Length: 388
View 1: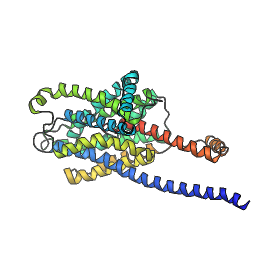
View 2: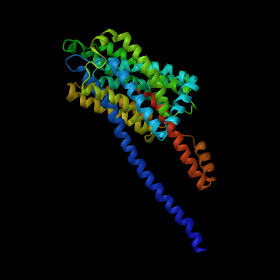
View 3: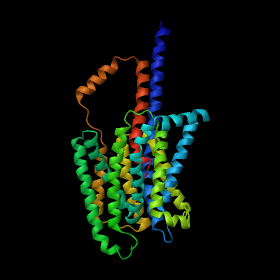
View 4: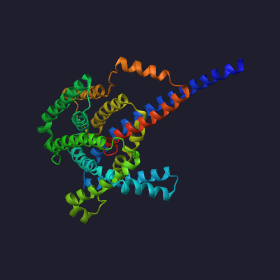
């Protein structure tokens, strides 16, 4: 009897030990996720700004957008092939079924892909004409546009804290723009090749397109069984084709004369690789990061971009910019806070979970965590895989 009663005790002890180890591993993964999100958010904007402000002839941004799409598609195809354990037959069958047999689902991605291609090109225009810190702050308007489109298109509800954070976000961006407008007369002479108004229009349109595309993507693909990598392949196919059309329309004669890779330096390749693989890396990492961590990462990346801009580009931080950026940082963090759950729902949830056996509970937790991670990754994907 003693031996039989000791078995469950040992089992419980082993379960607690495994849970403790899992929680420690998750905690480490969260810190790694935070670092990856901050580095990806800040480095892409700073590197684009750097290569676009260097003296000499510049590369064609339209070709960089196409190249990033091609690299992203090839990477996702390689990952899918590895998931099929190198079986070309299974790989080709999956591609044929996902792209051609289910062609209606594939065609649904044409609209968000068009918007993302436009968005990527607009962000090059915006970063080429705005200081990196100003762009980073202003681009947080995508939170406002995404929230508004979610309310209008998906009938989602926002908490009072989120509505307040959106007001603070708009106020902070407005203050930064007023501060930057006051500097225009001073910087016009020294930066004749840059147009602040053009950059501002580009970033605002980019925020609108980002908000609409993200919500539209979530709406049309809700409940889809396609994997993250297959969705990126489908998006990338349309993105490459549409990017080539934009390249031909905007820079066709110049590229025919100078070449597709004109102006490509190691730094430019670094930007393209960051644009192509950074978003994919974030899509993988973000499943270990909750909304609060993502909000903190975004806020911290604004600080990193601002501090780096001071030393790298001679950016001047004054009281108005600090006030505006502070409001934006606080608003981003406030918006990411979880909604308060009602006591009734939490009590009913706890009572129902107590009736489930330990083995089935562990199985369901594993299944739900995997599905939640996938859905969170999918929801985050449209804003991260293509330029953030």
